[in-house]
Image (cartoon, rainbow, N blue to C red; front, side, top):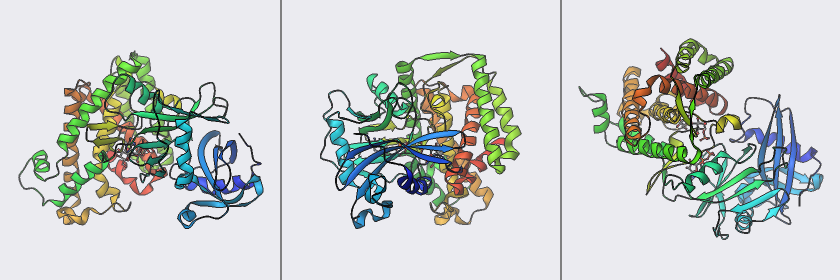
Length: 484
Ligand SMILES: Nc1ncnc2c1ncn2[C@@H]1O[C@H](COP(=O)(O)OP(=O)(O)O)[C@@H](O)[C@H]1O
Ligand SMILES: O=P(O)(O)O[C@H]1O[C@H](CO)[C@@H](O[C@H]2O[C@H](CO)[C@@H](O)[C@H](O)[C@H]2O)[C@H](O)[C@H]1O
């Protein structure tokens, strides 16, 4: 049953709550209008569960966000920190309104809906063909601070609730299903999904993907954590004397290069499987020029918002201009937002997650074909991030100072040398693994990789300025080094 409560009181509560959420993509711009697009009661009684799609207008742009609201007459202590506000019968709701993802009594029913392939109002719950989804597990939100909210159901499943909705099938579901079909071993199995029927939010003919239920890889560690452990070991060692940088990093203990090389190989295998699943086209010179223009347009937009980027604009623009002449290139589906936080080291090897593309991009851009070295450049940037963030922003971001090890008393130049040494060793290992497993050799396409790296770093400047200002020095520092 779909209910459309009169908007005012609930809207007022949500208007104050929404911009404070980590996953809210419109930070930095005031909300001009917030209204309820669809409201679906998934559970009535006490507690009650309401599924809402919020229409959020900021200037000319309207985004749609998914929220799950719990309502209880009395709020148990464990849910107090998640209260959004209280309604006394306005909008047909009486009681404490809270973020339902924190209430296992309300996350458990989502599995039962998927197992039963139910339809509730415009919401359709689905499971993978032949899959008997378990219904006895409570979902609790994962600790990762990400663009979406992931509910973890015991050791079995992880259910990603997409927060900002894109029209049509979400690329994460689309790509994971397609890769599973071609036998790719580097993605988790898909168990189910939730979708909103077309027209429910005015998005068009295809249903809008709301959630993706995947195999939970218990015991797997994400690449960012593994890389940081290695970086900390490296900074904890006394400064090496008279030794080539790569050897010094290798001898420091906790070397990550063998894993980086295996990650490069897994990346090339996924690119091969993406090419098989979705095909490859030759991008013309005009298309390459359009790509370079797109990079330059993002550069101008970000420089307008972030003054610290402006001194580097001419040098970056020159690098982008070069890609227009890179010759016809094979374009295909890629990951699109590839970094160390998107890969898990599981017992079976590296697994790639989150094929949604960059959260700030339009749906069309996220699905756009690209050269696979764009992903390679994303991961190369991530090695830079891992090496640098302790120096540039880690302490401010509460992520631990560099001063825990031998590097504590070193000069800025010596620390810079250390960061470059770690990043270079791991970047080289990743590229070696990628090329050896059949990917296009990054060394043979240096101008292209460089342009993709700059483009990613510019994107990161905007991402950090909006979401984690204390991290802004991380991409700015590497841009300062690369551009000069
Ligand atoms: N299948 C999985 N098994 C175990 N952990 C996972 C799985 N999928 C995601 N995660 C964890 O959840 C985090 C967020 O997942 P991700 O798909 O990247 O979401 P977001 O789009 O919000 O960034 C990952 O960094 C990883 O730590
Ligand atoms: O994982 P998301 O899809 O939410 O990606 C966004 O957030 C990422 C940060 O969580 C951001 O990645 C940047 O920071 C990472 C370290 O936290 C680093 O490994 C990446 O290289 C760097 O780009 C990503 O850009 C953004 O889209």
